[in-house]
Image (cartoon, rainbow, N blue to C red; front, side):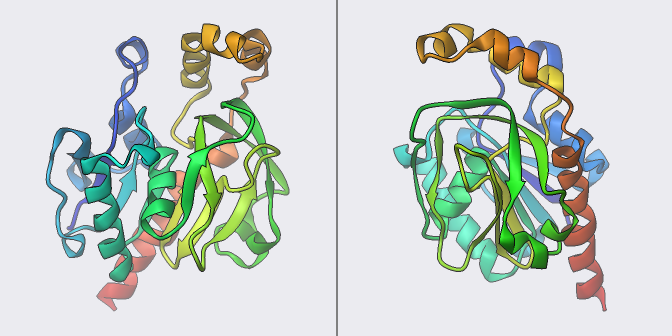
Length: 245
């Protein structure tokens, strides 16, 4: 069986990873795939990316880096994303991965107007969701965990927004039959979200936000979390079954 690769573009801060684990662990738990079916490719540290034809799918993680820095490893990964789209590889980008997918495919990424968006945010589904295999099953509004300074400001040609927040209209984006991305973090638990807010307490206060209010508003996000299993069921497994037929 071909592996699903976790394209690691960063890592959790040490204080958070020491207590809660790191990105690969969170995605393993959310996807509910066996370790034997997963392979971590740490592109930030120079790991080579496999040929897309040798993968069952890919999940592209978050990062403390900025897509606008256009770092060599990031631009190399952007080229790989374009190659993966050419073979209709199931892909899910998250946060940095979301922005990198849009950048790779011709969208525009830059700093979000008004500064950092952080905490459990309310997302509203958009008109395009009603005709999408994922979007059609979403409620009108749902909660999701977010922490980002940059965002997708302009979508690539042909991409569709399925859900957005008051601050960021492009939180959930469809690019192709099996390719989508989320600005929010479906892999975050409520405890992980709280840990990120605590870590940014002083920065949030300096930016005019209230860390205590953000902490108090953190809540479970079952709809957002379920998108990881949806990706496995409707994209990874569905494509494998189609290919086998």
